[in-house]
Length: 192
Image (cartoon, rainbow, N blue to C red; front, side, top):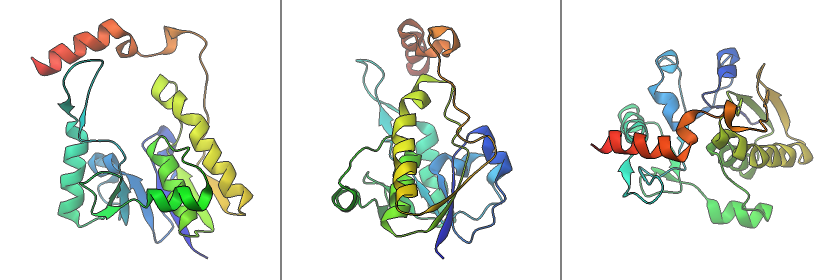
């Protein structure tokens, strides 16, 4: 049976037993001290190396650039929709096969990729998804692909604490950096 462990950086990653032969992680897993001894077989990144905040010029996302360099040093395939990929993500093929482009956070791309290549068992850790707004917005896309996997008969093993998501009705639980004024202030500090 084809099986793989998918790893993101949420707190539930601490419960990952790293039992499968294949280990896929989001690219920044390669930068975490507690994951340096893990044998990643692929890493995924769907973000660009330069991103804009509001209407400001793009700035380099150094964590992504460092992860790309680290993957190259370790000779780990970098799966991406961007030109820095060492293994291009088969986006058109996945959309054609599943009749859906409902993809968002990197983990949703990873699940769709595993389904495309007919993996029958997915071990998933570190997708706690909250409480930050960015993670909250990605929840529906992740659950869509988990549901698709379940409908295809794929066995899902979720790490303890995974999917322990919380919704917030107000801004008090959202980090201050999400407020426009603070985001602008952070951008000015970073580019100064």
